Length: 212
Image (cartoon, rainbow, N blue to C red; front, side, top):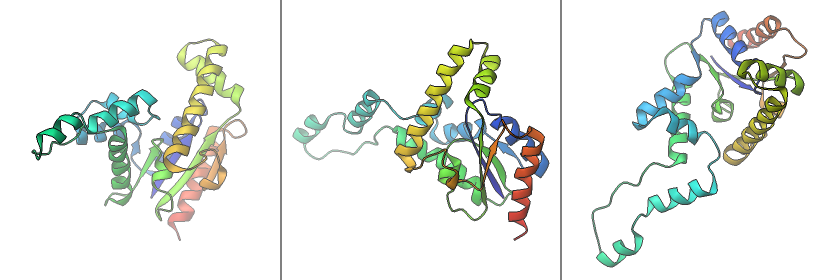
């Protein structure tokens, strides 16, 4: 069984994901997905992390030029040996998706996957349970301020930026409103539910699916 955890920043999604993985006896994946994709592409992990964001206009222009680095010269020179274009953000993101699909379709018992668009990648997958973890904005701001050692005002700014970037990412690449509860099997509000109770709720849904 695969459990995907999508979360608002500061809503305790990581803590919930790790606890669910421990409770179900499943491996937990977050940064390891980036590491595996980086090894497949033979690039740095930072390169893969950058591909998980909506690229800027400048980045898209550079990538487009990279596909055809010497178009006019090649046209004048006639037939030549084709060279492989550099990988683009789309190609790196496809590797992340491949890692996620391998986890879902592999021979292992399953996994708990935090983030990386796994909910969208595994839409409709028969072994997947999708969970959204959210919390009130001010609660999230206090958590981020404490975690990062910043002011509450700065934490609010970071949260707004994070929420907007995630919304744009899911909309651009998957045509999904990532906060829409219809995309999930279960939505957890950690402002209204203790973490331990939330973990039990997720495991109950997973075990119910496994028994079908």
